[in-house]
Amino acid sequence: MRAVARAGAASIALAGALASGAAAQGSSYEELQVFSGVLNTVRLNYADSVGYPALVRAAITGVLSALDPHSYYVSREEAGRLGALDRGELATAGLALEMVEGAPTILAVRRGSPSEKAGIQPGDRLLRVNDTSVAGLGVEALRLKLAGAKGTRLVLRLARGPRLEPDSISASFKLDYVRESSVTIARMMDPKTGYIRLESFGPAAGNEVRKALERLEGLGAGRLILDLRGNPGGLVTQAVEIAQEFLPSKTVVFRTTGRKRDMQKEYVTGGNGRYRHWPLVVLLDGGSASASEALAGALQDHDRALVVGRRSFGKALIQVPFDVPPRGDLLMLTVGHVVTPSGRVIQRRYQGITVQQYRSFAGATGAPDDTAAVFRTGAGRSVRGGGGIAPDVPLPEPPPRPAWVVVASDSALDVAVADSVAQTLAPGPAGRAAWIGDPARWQASLLPPYLERVRQRLGVTAGRHPVLEPWLARQLAARVAEVRWGADAAEELLLRSSADVSAAAQAFATHGHLLRGSSQP
Image (cartoon, rainbow, N blue to C red; front, side, top):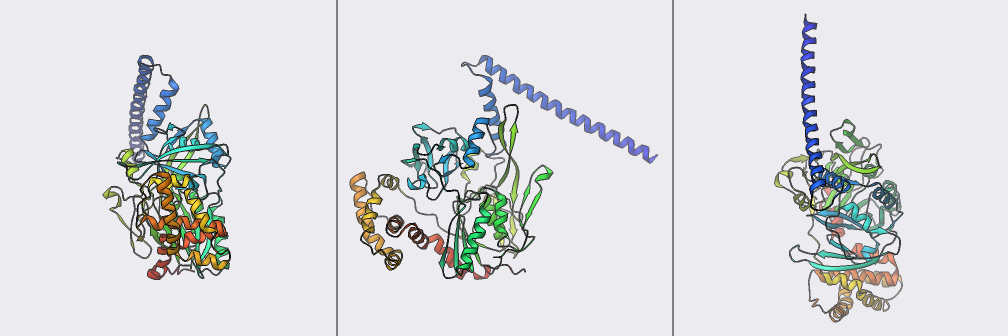
C-alpha cells in the first residue's frame, strides 16, 4: 500500500513538474513570438531601410548588457583579430581600457609602450581615434582600433581631469610591439628588501615571479614588496601559481561560484611556498583588477601580506568563450564569480543598478550596502567585500596633472632640458648615486628652464604648483638618469623617489606584527 502511495505521489509530483515546465516553455515561446513580431514590424515599416543583421546584432548587445557589463559578442572576423592581438601578433598602443561612467577610460599604460612615451596616463578618457569618435564602441572594438601594423600612426584625443571641466589633450604615436613580460622590474630596494613589479598575469607570470624571487634571494633579499598597481589582470590561474610561493601547502587561494556545478571550484596551493616566511607588502591602486585582486585578497585574508595603496578596481568575474553557430562568431559570457578565502566577493555590484552607476563605482566603495558585511581574516582582522580590495594602509591619490604636460612631452620640451643637464653630470657610479639621491638638485636645475620653455612655446601660465612640481622634477630627473647612465639608473631613481614604494617599505617597520610570514611548516 505504501509503495502504491509513493508511486501515486511521485506521479503527481512529476505531473506538476511537467505542467510547470510546459507553462514556462509556453511563456518563453510567447516572448520569442513577441520579439519576432517586433523585429518584423521594424524591418517592414521603419522609416529607413534596415536589415536583419543590424537588428539582430543590436538585440544581442541588448541581451548581454542586461546580464552584466562585461559579457560581449563579436563576429568571427573580430574574434580572429582579437586572437592575433592576444598572441602578440599585432602592434599596439600599450593601453588597457575599461568603461567608466560610460566613457572608455585608460585603466593601465604598459611600461615602455608608445602610449607611455606619449604621456597618456591612467584615468584619461578616450574621445577620438584619428578624428573618429569612439562613442558607442565597446572595449573589445576599441582594442582593435588601437592595434595594427607596426609603425601605424595614431592620434588620440583624450579628456583629463574633472568631467565638468576637463582638459582636452592630443597624443600622437606609432604602434609598436609591446614587451609582454609580466614581471617588468625585479631589483633590490635595500640590502634585505626585494621589489617586484608585476604588470600583468600572462601565461608565464608564475614562472617569471619565481625566477625573480630566486634572483632577489641570491642578492640577499629576505622580504618583498610586490607591486600590482595598474595591473589589469589576466589569467587567474597564474594568481594561484604566484600565491603558492608565499603560502603553505593546501591553502585556499580563491573559490569560484556560478549556477553550473562545474563553476563550484576551490583553487588551492600544491605545496609549501619557498618564500612563505618572508614578510610581504602588496601595493594596489584603482587600476589593479581581476587576477590582481584575487591574489591580493588571498594574501590579505590569510594575513600573509599587508596591502598598501588604494582600493582596487572591483572586477573579478570568470568568463568563458563560446562559439556561436553557424558562422563561428564568439560569445564571451560571464559564468562565475571569484570569492576570496574569507568569503568576500571582489566584483562590485551590477545587478539592480544602471550600467552608468556600475561604471562610477570603479575603485570606489560602491553603494553603502555593498560593503556592509564584515569578514574575518585568519587572524581575526575585519575586512569587507563588494567593490574591490580595500588596503590595510590607505595612501592619498596622486596629484592631478594638467593637459600641458602631455603637450610638452609630445613637443619634446622635456627631452631638450633633460638632455642638456645630463651632459653636465659625472658619468661614473659616484655621479649616478649623487644624482639619484638629490631631489632638491632636480628641482633647482631642471624645473626653471623646463617651465620657461613651456611658457614660451605653449603660451600657458605653468605657474608654481607645490604638489605637481616634485612629480615633474622626478620625471625630468629620470630622463637625465637614462641619458647619462642608462635605463637601469632611471628605473632606480623612479623607485627610490616613489612615495607609494616608500610607504610600502616603511610598513615593514610600522606593521611588523602583521608581516612575520606564515607560522605553518
